[in-house]
Image 1: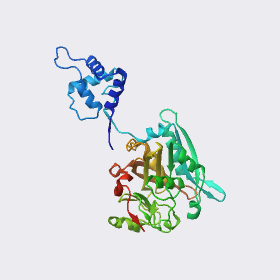
Image 2: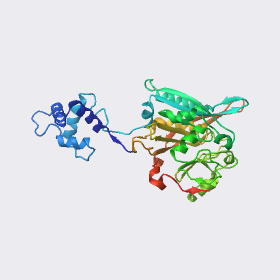
Image 3: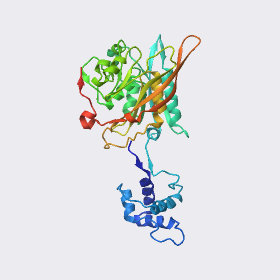
Image 4: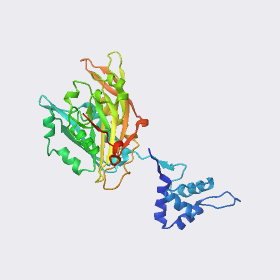
Length: 371
């Protein structure tokens, strides 16, 4: 993750306030408290300040850092308290939009609309994160009703959530394309793939995918779902591990397989993914999705730690797509009725596998067509 020079931003704020580099250099020199009897310059040369503000490499001596510390300390920005660098995270970018719309998938069951409790928990936690430490972000929830067949999905038109994607500044989709058509639509536009695509149709292989065995594969319709036989050849061993509810996440050519469920093992590993992009119109899109419900909740819990800057890319063009893999441990207990109750114990972003896909660069951003 590229770090950003906070010192440069602080100096730029004071330059704007003082009006000139000469005035800034004088203020720094006047603030520096030199030891009695010491000799030499008291602050920073104007040209060196200019180079720092221009983002150039400059040598800084100890006495110059001390001068900066004394000057900034007068404004409660001293180097002992405010780091020189910072790593931008995704959550403040979302919060800065002031209003965030959430898309959560739902299914009709016996005439009732049902939403996964994991997806509900993911939504609740993200709302809490966005309004911590102080409230100020309005969060709106839109339910996306899942269709039972590919034909029904392709005939979705003029639903409220589709208008939200066109008009709202910040949108977060919760859960994978298997449980949320909003996720499928957003990922399709991010990676320039068709939405609602059968895994068995010829299509362009996207940079990420949820890997399912039969019979689940036949029930899916998304460009971001594929079978074990579509994995890259080096992953042949992992392909053999994918069966029953033991699914996998693919990011690029890296494959992450969840632990198989075993009655005598009450703690297992699962995976989720965070995907984020700044759209050409400046809107912010985020997906928090898992291989199962617990993976989705884990992705939401990990989102505050996602070091993602959406500032890169040209204005007026879609920015790069940032992908973060989340690993989580899940425990389960059995209720008195025999129902398994799962809970995310812990989660972490696997920073080794951080990926950014820039579709303008060709093969790295978009994989070749597969049958």
